[in-house]
Length: 567
Image (tube, rainbow, N blue to C red; front, side, top):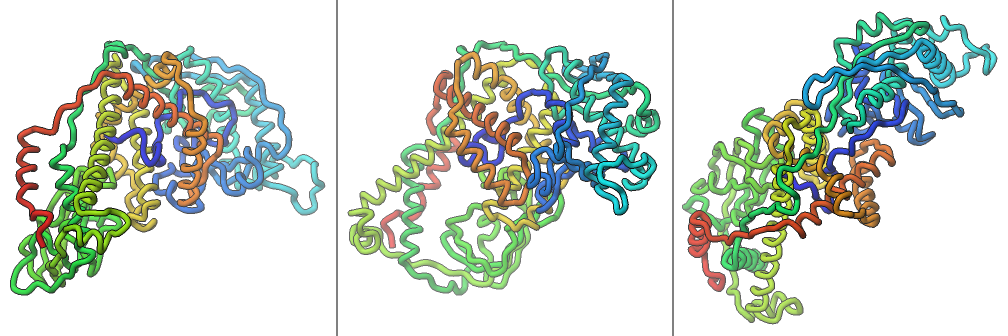
């Protein structure tokens, strides 16, 4: 399960925003409306667009809008509309609604906009077009209204003009309709949609002089009902190691230190063995797609079999210089790039050279000669490294506890249906965060990472983690209740630090964002972390020792390694 907190709080990952209803006409393309429209409107935004420099995702302001005014808006058809270039009086009107319950969480609202409101929205839309799209025509006196036929001609014809007017009406009426239809229940904004199939008939029926009715679907949040009181929750986790594993990890580190001061020589007459270093060509491809994984194609790369984060060495043992080999494997379950963890891949390697090591003996003389001022003896150096690896193990244990707490809360909730759109939205956000993190960590080039930003990859990511995502959504729905009932407070310093981190990440990849939306997202993330930390401190927990048969066998294998003091 992905931790809700990553590097240092979320690493671009955040929990779903709180259930809210945005104010009317806030953002020209709210509620995924442009994603539901016909081909007259912009195509659906893909994850690739989110990573493309200079792009303007639907629902986000363009660069010019951000520069000139916070509320300037870009139409999905490319018409540049600035709602706040001049002061506009907000439109005031009510809509009538009827609601149909499609499932426990899904609702269908039939929304009727009165005739007067339809006319007012139409007139305002025409004024915006005159002011911001058409501008001042040569030979036309500034401020003088344009004939409607000229407006239609200037924006590209009757069809584009009518589409624009309808979209303006829906953007104005939809928030009001959902607010009336939700009947006091929280609503997931990302779930609000006008069915794609309805748009052609809506366009045909739209008349700025008559009342207008349309349908919208949305999800309400399921109620938070506890089957087990929070005070009675408990979790059980298992230690990831013990003193022996810490000592073995420290010995591995010491061997790497010794390599810095040893020497290697070319191997002749034998194949690759554990402990060797080699020069090789390497390419690792996803088994399903056959596409190379970004950052994992190299030519004549130096590779240490004792620092193998890919788990590729076992497939190469015995290979000789000049030999090539292709084999299937799985990426390690703790690999840094989470959506590559346990991924079936095909590795192709060719060995150019193999080297074996002659290392200096590890003793007090070695430490004083090469690490003077840092450690005073071999024993002190080893003890310090054991303490360091033990600290890393505690951090892994804390991550386990965090995941266990999220699952315990999810299991304690009586929730017959988890809104599927919330699950998909959370999965897409996590997928996007992983891609952004790969770019930031320079795991692959921007161009290579963008090749992963496909709907198919996102769908696969969600499918593989659906149960964990559902648990996280359940937990997210309970956060506000836990936060309020336990009297918790936000750390504004943590909010500011996380905001600055997110801002740097967005700017580094050229992704546009709105400050208020990002800040609200950050506050939700910090709130979730605050709740998790409280739960970790207050839920009953049991830590099982690292003593299973499987781990005992692994410990025996560790004991067969080269003694740390050997040359």
